[in-house]
Image 1 (cartoon, helix red, strand yellow):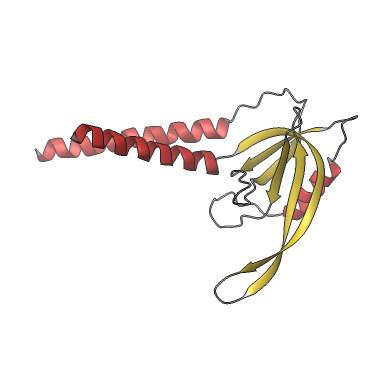
Image 2 (cartoon, one colour):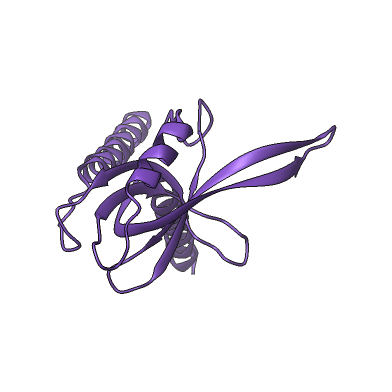
Length: 168
C-alpha cells in the first residue's frame, strides 16, 4: 500500500514538472503572419488601475489553424527570458505580414500556452524567416536543459543515498 502511495506521489510530481517545463521552455511554430495589433487593457491591482498596451501577432499555420501570440517584455521577471524591445519584434512582425498567394513562412519562438477559456496567449520571444513550412527545428536548448536537469537529479539522489549509507 505504501509503495502505491509513493508511486502515485512520484507520478503526480513528474506530471507537474513536465507541465511546468512545457509551459516555460521555448517552443517553435512555423506560421504565416497575417496581422499585428496593439490593444489597450486596463490592469487593476490592490491600489490602482492603469492602462497598458498589449501587442498581438496573428498568424496562420500551413493547415489553416489560427495562432495568436502576445508580445510583451519579460524584463527581469519570471520566466527569465530577459526580453526587451517588444516594439522591435512588433515592427519585424509587421514587415513579415504576407497573404496566401505569396506566403512568407516565419519561425516564431514562444513560451506559454493558449487558453481561450482563461484568455491566455503564448508570448512571442523571437521571429525569423523559415525556409518553408516543412522546415525541421531541433530544440537544442530544451534538450540540453532537460538533460542537465536529469543529470542534476541523479547527482543529488546519489549524494543523498551516500549520505544515508554513511549514517547507517
